[in-house]
Length: 257
Ligand SMILES: [Zn+2]
Image (cartoon, protein in one colour):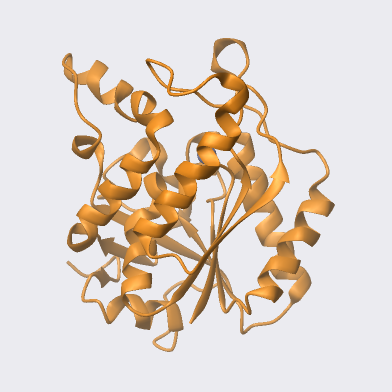
């Protein structure tokens, strides 16, 4: 099965759904990654891993490392530049030209013969404008292609046992819950690739616990998916992505223990 996973920044693929992508690759899917920016506007490490002007280049390399660890079949970047984080940690989208983004996404979906698209949730996980932009573009691309053969799923779907409720997209109920413990080491290895982001990964947890934690200690093992298109209340048995994930023994419906 050909799957396109589309995210705003390097590290979204790993920190938000790395276990899911690793399970899909392990189950035999061709997972193609498309990242809109090189994360130029993010942090460059504490202490800095590289000068700020090199950040895009370094993060692209980190992304290549993570894609390989996750078992991705290919990695592409769009040519958007991630805007710098503003005062008071204000976050921004990377373009106002949503139509061009939709066209570019359609082109990649067609070139990899995608049968499923996985992208950000409707609330951009924690409201990130760039994640929400990718979600809207994904939704429009799917509508425009208008083929029921192409499935669209979003990450960080909401369910009562979500391990980090702050990241759950409240309007996206979970259709599949994934136990990613069997690919924990893969997810950790991919997270370790994103060296410029390590300080960011551990900051909140370290603050909450009042002591420094390491990157492997903040990697969570439960992930979830919401199927946006075709819209359903419960996943039908013939859903090909669910069949593939269930073949790993690591996926379940949300109402089953
Ligand atoms: Zn992001």
